Image (cartoon, rainbow, N blue to C red):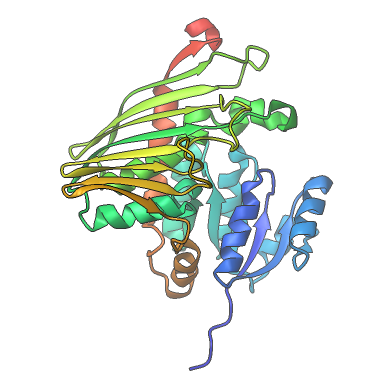
Length: 344
């Protein structure tokens, strides 16, 4: 049998550095990078230096109207991502967005409608699960019944702000969406996957600006409580990672099961083990440490197979919309604290 031609992809919107991870995971999986478009010369130059095989498109339509391109990827300004995805699907292409995929419910509903009508793929790269070896291993263990039924998750997502290096849109709530939409979509994604929940409510949520009154639109803290008939979950995200930590954030996931627990230290182990991807398992037989540094990351290969075969192995098409809808609801109903509207 002759080998299949590679899936060809292009990038539209390079505003978040996550575009480099998105591009890398597709190249690792065997896809072919064709072109990219960015209106910012400095971002275009950096992308060309990293991926010299990609040509700079003169306009977005040059990519959208190229029938040889199968997939568009984007890490545009968050408020622009849905528009890019809708345009890609309307032109017969599949789409992979950086998270968050949406900043408004109207954009989500329109993208969901277009996806169903065009029968295209709308994937969101939830990198804290899909590109985290420890999280992939945890998903394997939970699916195998290692801790019984998962009934609760705690997802912690601290980040370093690096305020002086952030673009203006980072501090504009209309453009980044809010901290629960932006960061906590990772933790919501993991709650849905690990607990198998679908009928989920946001029981309570909070957003705050405690530290940065000079940026009145910035939310530097957020939390949410999720609840379904199967499980509950707690999420905390922030922009407080101290400069003394060697990584951008000590991200953690704790999964409580009826027969055990799993804790992930994704980026560092404060007890001294080097690197990231640390997994701690407590089950009916004892306590176990699992080094996940060599765990395979299948998302890229699965997505390319889905593009070829019109399947849903990388994620069900309902999943990115469910996660995004929950993040939008949590953001909309959140109690505002600190310097946000004087706590009103």
